Amino acid sequence: MLISCISENNKNLEKFCFFIESTIRIQLINLIIENINLRYTHFWEEPINKCFVENGKKFVEKMENGSICKFWLVGIEMEEKTKELNEFIGLEKFSEEIRERIPKIFKNSGNNIQTFYLSQNALLLLD
Image: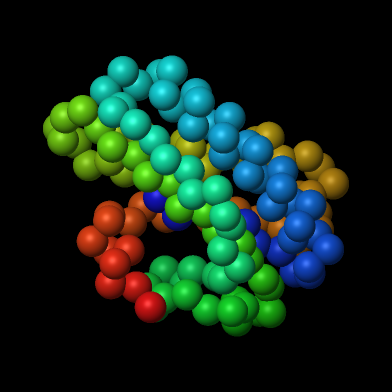
């Protein structure tokens, strides 16, 4: 899973992304508690200062509108491969729960998050 933190300026990016990073950790703990079929999760500690463009399946320095980003990679392995991981963890629900925790001060400042499901093989093919 790739989680991207997006902001219009550097000052907001640092504060907003620090909050998002903490929230991701909380969401992962909840995911582990709720799903006994998880073998393990891994959170890449170092955020990467690039933006992911899904339609082009590539990383860029800035979005077309000039926004800047950081992203984290989250690895999740299931005990059984009975379902697609994206369906099992409910990627939209995972993202929405992070969004619900965002304080109002960040919501109106050009900040946003995006969450993408990428298989390990798909990640290896990216630029």
